[in-house]
Amino acid sequence: MTKKPLCWGLIGASDIAATRIIPAIKRRGDAVAAVQSTTAEWATEFAATHAIGRGVTDVDVICEDASVDAVYISSANQRHASQALAAIAAGKHVLCEKPLATSMADGVEMVEAAKKKNVVFAVNHHLPGAAAHRTLQKSVANGNLGRPLAIRVGHAVMLPPRLQKWRLDDPTGGGIVLDVTIHDISAVQAILGTVATEVTAIGTRQGEWGSDSNSQLPDAVMANLFFGATPVQLHDAFTVEHFPTSLTIIGSEASIHAENVMTQDPIGQLWRTAGTDVSEVDVGERRDLYDVALEQFQAAILGEGEPVVTGTAGLSALATSLAIQESIDSRKLVSVQSKGIQG
Ligand code: NDP
Figure (cartoon, rainbow, N blue to C red):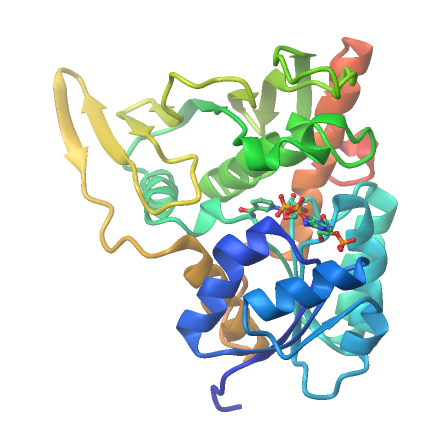
């Protein structure tokens, strides 16, 4: 198959589509046939703002459009499953935002449906595509750090005012775990090349979000996980304004501390420590994370590789996130396998 520009249908007229994916689609020279939103006025306004041919309310219009090769889904989390299943049934390749679904049953159905229909189904976890994260992954894979003894992730940030909506209050699709923690899990899965087996976590509500927000959904979490033999510690929050994000791999031969790398931008610095020697690690070419996601998605369509995060990897990240949510609620250790996936 020759590489030609893709024609996209967008399901969900969202902030992430506007700020990251549409610019990345345009940089590639791909086309967008239509954007769907459940609100007609918003669909029309969004289409006009981003020079997209049509704004529609019905997902079927995009699924039935023969010019559309691939669908990008960035609607509210609880809509991902039904919309992805409709697009897959219509034979479209699907790049779905995280979490791929809000239940394991839906996630499994999506991954299985894509396999049966022989279409590419990818989940848009951006971090594993970052040059910094690829450098961390290689450092583990090539044995440069020795045995990975522990990983610590700090992904506690301040939720920008424009995003202080459903993430804070929606009990089915919101909360810190399905928004931020799930990204950490996708990143650690890629770095260690394995999935989590057991988790224990505590969550709390810290933000002063105003009188409109009566929810007790956690906006800060600390979790401890086993990824095989490696203990992993995560701190995620919507409430932290004055501390950089970080990912530290502590190895038996050396360690790497990476700062400002839990982000949507191709930034951050890595330092390697071996004994008393501390040196900065070169991560090579830094590319836009969403450019990398779209490039690998198209390569997968052409049979030339895998997406940055496959549906199966997205499903493991969901299972682990749901186990963390259960541990927060029950205050107990939870096996990831109990969520319906092999650890
Ligand atoms: P938004 O809140 O911006 O949009 C989600 C939905 O809200 C839209 O699809 C639309 O619903 C509705 N909506 C938004 N703005 C308006 C408006 N002005 N008028 C009417 N309806 C509106 O979502 P986000 O961009 O924050 O997140 C979307 C998805 O992307 C989520 O699944 C999230 O988890 C994921 N995400 C991923 C990131 C990544 O880096 N991979 C980063 C940020 C988000 P409808 O579809 O019904 O029209």
